[in-house]
Length: 475
Image 1 (tube, rainbow, N blue to C red):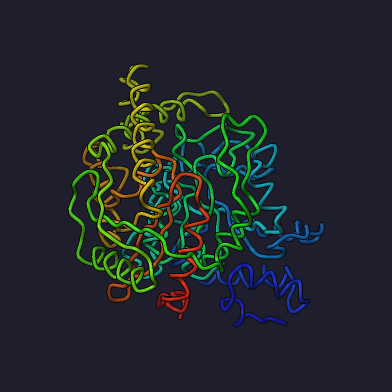
Image 2: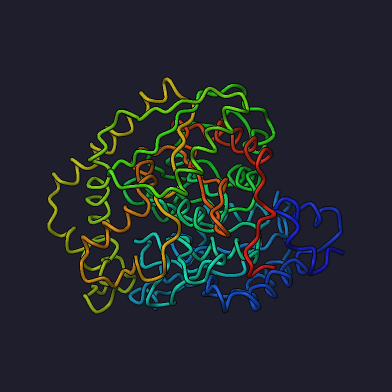
C-alpha cells in the first residue's frame, strides 16, 4: 500500500493510478490528506471549512470511474456551490447563507471525474483581492515564507497545494486569482479561455466574462487532465469557447514544433518590474530559443492605458450586484463588509449604464487587438508578477483609501488582468527562483488555444522541472 510517506511523491494522476492498480485506496488517500491538513494548516490557514465526513460519505457511497478516482480535492469558498455545503464567499456578510441545494455543473463534473471533496479553501472577500486576508477567516500564509502573501483570491488553494496537503485544488480567476497565487506559491496555474468551463446553472458568466474556473496544480499534466474532465458549455450558457481539437492531456506530451514566441516586459499600466521577475522572463525566453523556437521581443499594440480603468468599471458594477445577492434579501451596509469592498461598490453606484457599455466595448477592443497580434505570434511571454510576493498587510482590503488599494493591486500584478479582459488562456509556470522563493513566468495563447500552451508548458516542465523544490514547511 502507498503509505503516509509516499503520498507526496505523486501528482493527482499518479495517485489515481495507484488507486486503479489496487496499491492504495481512496480512504487511505483521504486519511493522508487529512493528516497533512491537521499538521500544516495551523501554519498556513489554507483550509477554512473541513468536510471530512462529507468525503467519507462520498467514498462509502461509491466513487465514479474517472481520471482522478479517489484523489482528495479542495474547493474554493467562492463560485463553487456544493450540495448541502455552505459557501461564505470569504465574507462576514454571507457567512450565514444557507447551504446550496445542488452542485454547480462544474462541481458535478469534478465529482464525476472521481475527485473526493474534503474541504473548502480560504479566499478574500468576494474574490476582490490578489491576497487572501479576509476578516472572516484570517490571512492565508505562504508556505515558502509565512510572512508573505500566498496570492489571491485563490490563496487558500495555492497554499494548500504548495504545502503538499494535496496535488491539485479548485481555483477561480477574475483578474489573476488563479495565476497570482500560482506565481506566489510555485505552482502551475492556468486561466482557461473565456467560457471554457461553465458557471451553470447558477450564472451565465462571471465578472462580465472576466472570470474563469479551473485549478492550481503541481504538474502540467494534472491541469490538462482536469480541464479535459470539466470543459464544455452548460445548459443556458450565453456563449461557448471554441471546441478543442482533441484531449488536452495528449498535448502535454506532444512536441510543440517550432513556435513563434514573443516576449514583453512592458506592463500595460507602466509600473516597474523587479529584477528577479525580469530575470525569470529572460531566462525562459533564452530556454525557448534553445529548444528551437523563434523568440523575439515584441510589445502588443493595444490600448494599454485602458486595461486597468476598464476592469475597475466592470468590477465596481459587479460588486454592487454581488452585495445585493444575499439569499435572505437583506442589504449590505458599510459595517458588514471590508472597506475596499464597500468603497468599490460605492464607486459602482456612481457609474452609468453608458459607462458599463463603454467598458465592455473596451474589453472587446482589447481582445481584437490581441487577436491581431497573435496572427504573427503563437505565444506571448510576460513576467508572472511585477514583484516577489509582498508581505501580509500590504494589500489589506481594510485600507481606508480604495484608490491606493487598487493601485497596489495592479502595481503587484499588472500582467494578469489584461487577459481576463481579452478572454485568452494564460498560464503561470514556476520556472525561476530567487533565493528560496519561486518566480513565475506567464505564457499567453491565442483565444481558444490552450493546446499550444499545454504543449509548450509540457516541454518547459521537462527541460526545467520544478516539482522537487519544496517549502521548508514540507521538509
